[in-house]
Length: 418
Ligand code: SAH
Image (cartoon, rainbow, N blue to C red):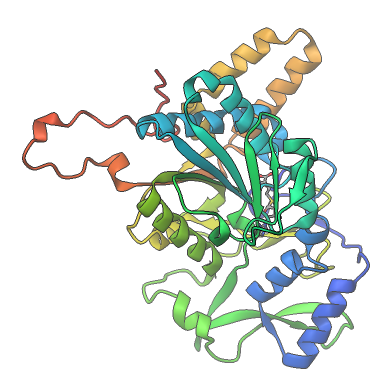
């Protein structure tokens, strides 16, 4: 039961938790009127006292949803290979930062660091550090245990990183609340199921023009929330709906746009690459806002703070927000990306090396979860930001014959590791 494509599964009945977030929201709505869906989502997920990620952050089998890195170690290993392949293609710079946004339980970075260790001879002269951007105190603790065995210290002398430690493989790790706090420098960025958790605005086309969907108290039922439409246009309708829009319902995630702008500028200035993996679409879908609790779909307006809220990532919007500062690749389906990265070969090796039937069945089952088009294979996508010179030679008019072909970008093409 992963968070699959929109509409999958039945609706879960909501139990109300302790209702603290609902009380906080109804007080706010009574005092100042309906709020945007983005404001509602921000409160429900990352409110410092009662937010879902702040308190629960239920990634994993015992939580509310499961993600690819939690399903199979192979997923993170292949992503680790992607970074090494790009590092080599970019001329093996002698230092890089691995920056993960929203690391969940830390499993993905753990798998990547294991690959870095196995390929230590390749990376030997490279100075690597890890930088995690995480708002949830609860999840940062889980990440610290996973990655360092719990050996971390608060970092009050440095105002940007709130915690630091050393990974089990000997690499320094720092934690931040915001990407802007991560020091500049050559960096490989990773965002797996991160952008889908950021707050979206929702808009509905009506006979009177575009209206924003808002969240309000239901006057008929005490302590229940409902969606309403703004009586007139809001600043967001003006800013985010394109005149050529053909859909009747549109979701926009401005926070994702701001983060992609930052990533693109940083890559343009300092070099590196970003890999974004998430479920999403290319500017075609309409209503994808949904909730998950105990691995079941959950009414987004019921018991806020107790369920994960999410919306499909609009990759066309991310591409637009890169504003030409970085080149983009994808979105490409997860099953194609992993196939290009050599998942079949990796599976064969693991199957050959595993002695017992149970392990083999587990390997085949997790491969099916990641690759089957009906499961995670089709609705999850990979998308990359790269410096322009990684894809196109800078213009060398005087000596065009000196251009050697640029190596293809792994995942989006077949992996060619020498
Ligand atoms: N990448 C992980 C976890 C995905 S869940 C995996 O695939 O398993 C989303 C993650 O993003 C959580 O770690 C959550 O706490 C974090 N997060 C959500 N909103 C955030 C924000 N605004 N800034 C930083 N981290 C955020």
